[in-house]
Amino acid sequence: MKLLIIADDLSGAADCAIGFAGAGHRTVVTLEATCTQVHEGADTIAVDTDTRRLTPEEASARTTAVFAEMSTRGQRLYKKIDSTLRGNWAAEVAGLQALAGMAIVAPAFPATGRTVRDGRVYVHGKPLEETATWQLEHAGLSADIDVQLMAAGLPSQRLDADAFRDEPGSLAARIDAMAASGVQALIVDAQTEQALATLARATLQSNAEFFWVGSGGLAREIATLDPRKDTCNASRNGADDAGFPGGPILILVGSLSAVSERQCAMLRERGGVEELVVPPVVLREGASHRDWRAWQEQIAVSMRAGADLLLRIGRDDAFNPAEGMQLSTALAALVEPHFMKTGGLIATGGETARAMLAAARISNLHLLAEVEAGVAVARPLDVTREHRPGIVTKAGAFGTDHALYAAWLTLRNETGPGVLHADVRK
Image (cartoon, rainbow, N blue to C red):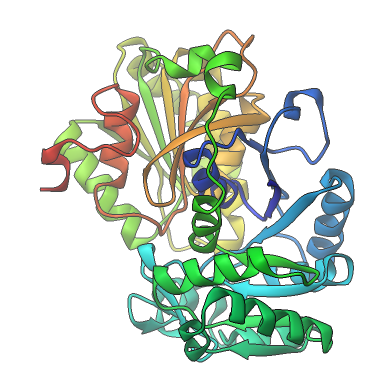
């Protein structure tokens, strides 16, 4: 099976596609929605449309344009959405539905604590609208999936948990019947990985015209049903089988979530990594700020000393969630003169990862494996590129407390991707 994944941010594109890399598919993540020669031979292509900051209308238009440009005959579509419904996901799904058939909407990712019950998302058992992340960005707005779809002009029906008592073949027939009756969006209640596995089997047996809409949870279940021996990685990217290059590891954290805070604390404690917190005012003013050069020199001193460096965006009273990309772009510009000295990059937050890769002129990533659920390991796809650091991407509010530490060990070649030392989890 060939698959096109369309995501609205970079970390999401990677964490959705990584299951297919693990199943032996040659898997590429691209920042540019243009078919190029480097994509040839890829079974799974994940495109970052970078639409989370746009208006719903702009996001829908860009998403449908990406589908028109990147889709090929015999390829299936997976619209990756955030498991906590961030961004313009409903407008993007509505735009794609007119082109790709019924939307099967299943944002649950039980491995990371995201479940769907009665058409509503829960995060570790708490209703999504009660979480700090939702209150920070969407206070006063409904978190109900059907309400958001209807606001985008897409009526929906729901597939409740009882449906998963059926055999996949019977469920597939039920899905076919709903599509034939004109259902445009089907919201799936799923609270376990087993439910997602049953949904994956049923949809792969379905004859309906549809596309998947979900997070990395459903994607990895689909991937396990289409495993293949990866003959491409070794033959075409032999260098990717070797350990990661030496050199200091740069960890960029743009997320202000409590999850990221705990992950940084463990990395500092166990890895002894140097930390610098850049004041937002420096990043807002950029090179015109009086301390800009001093910050660049401080980073240069650490890089020249070969020290691993954790760089974080600070927070002040003027903080606005809408300025995330601006701050991330400035942070990348601060680091860019020294990026070639790094042996590895860990980027938390899709905007932060995209900004740094864009500044470093890295447009395509070859996904290799994952550190833990949703934490993807990659290299720049271009094997002729002189500087090919190991790259780990992770959504800001994703992962266990030891996600950054485990990623750091991976890039230091002290453990393999997906295989943690016994002391990591203690």
